Structure formats: C-alpha cells, structure tokens
Length: 335
Image (cartoon, rainbow, N blue to C red; front, side):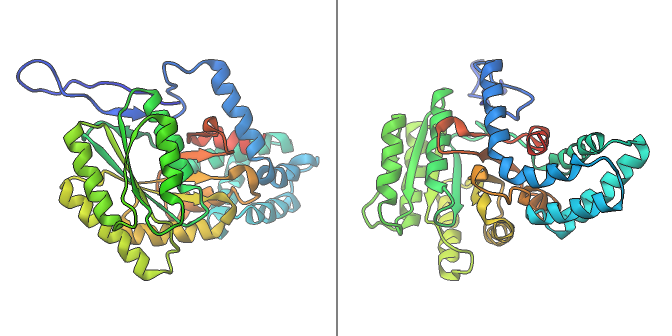
C-alpha cells in the first residue's frame, strides 16, 4: 500500500514543483486500498511468518508463568535467530511488563511479548519518501539469490501504478541474464530501461541518472550486481557506482537499499553491517520470510544495526511485497 501526496513548495510563479511522494507505513493506508486488500495482506503475513512464529507461540500453550516458561521462550527466540542481545532485551522487557500488569495467564504474557517485539521493531518502521528530489535515485544492492532484481521489479510496479514515472538502470552487468531479467520487469511495467551489453556498471548508472534528469523521471532505480560482502574488490565496485552516481547528481543517491534474504538469519545481520559500512545504507527490503524459521533476525537488526526496513516480502506475487509495520509484524508473528 502506497500513499502518494503533493506538497507545495515556494516558487515564483505560483505553480509549485511536484511534492514528495511517500510510500507510507501501514497505519496510513493508500487512498486506493480497501479493508479487504489490507486484510488480505495481513492474512498472507501471518501465513508467511508461521514457520518463525510457531516455535515461539507454542511456549505459551501451558498453564503456568514460571522460570521454565522464560527458559523455553529464550530457546525459542534464539532458534528464530533473534540473536543474544535482542533475546536478552525482550526477556527483560517481558518480565517487567508481566510484573507491572500482574499477568497470570500465558495467553496474556504472549500478548505482552507481542507488545515488546513491536516496541523493539518500531525504530525500523519508516516510510520511503519519493519526490524530495527529481529524480529520486535509489541504488539497490544485495547478494546473489536474495531476490534483489525481483524486488526492484515489484517496487517498480507499485510506483508505476501510483503514477510515478520510473527509469531502470541495469547495472548488474556481472550476473548472467541479469539484464534480461530486469528488462522483463521493465516490459511488464511499461517503463524505460538503460542498459549496455557488457558495460561498466558505474557507466550504466551514470547514464541512467543523466537520462532520468533529462527526461524528467520521478525515480531512477539502479540494480547493482549481487555480491558477498567478503568480496572486497566487488564491494569497491559498489563504492565506485555510488561515487559516479554523485557525479551525475551531487545529491544522489538519495536512497541506498539492501535486499536481504530472511532465510539467512544471522548472516543477514552480518550483511547489513558490512554493506552499511561500505555504502551507508538508508533502508532494507527483507524477502522470503515465508520460507524461513529465522524471521526473528529483524529483532536482531533492530537491536544491533537499526537500519529502516522499508518493505518485507512473504511470497513471489506482486502483492506479497508490502511496507513494513512493526505492530502488524509482531502480532502476525505470534498469531
């Protein structure tokens, strides 16, 4: 659900420049979103998080709130790749909430845990804003297999559906068929794509940003090559792309997003740390949460490297990529 708005900016004569377009968080649904649409997403989110949440929820099937329950919960959170720091934080917070509320039923404690998780994840909830710059240049990175190019295609579709003009940059020139995959998404979404056979990724990015400015596009999405953060020469290539993009537009890139695969658990946290060190990330897209029991990694990210999570994915379909809402996630996790 995407909410786009226009903000007037002072400028003579009276007609104002296009205003920022916000991809809003869940509490502010898009104008064209129906309650049925939102409920459909929540149902898919609950189903998608079932593998992660089932181990945690079963802790609360007993009848007593005792030390054994907290020990079982600690094990379940660690198994969900919540990480030691976030697990310790959640258990301490939960004990405090139980004491203050005088909760006596496991079901009530489960509700308090949902509140604790929602509060921990709240700093990750932030809307992606489009329109403060024209074009808004979004650089997207990620390791091979994380779903980077597919996520770019889905994001392009959402933006195009809401009236934003998008230009794609096929700067993933290392992976076989990467250009072709992005070209398919460009064709599906009826948007333009800048590409070069065997071209230099930085040069492709420069050409795309220059073209986006000349053609008055709202967004330029730069698909960079997938790589492991341990491949230092390839990480340097990412830094080069960022430097060259800045030559085309001194204010760009305006967003640097990392796509991470929820299946990788703590490795995803390590990727966030490494890519943030290299590129100064502004946001994350977390994919494939429907196929993993390690979705607790979002708690680890919130505790150790709180980079905003703009979108989460729980399937292959277009509608399976949505904006991240901390409370929805926590409640779906323990549903």
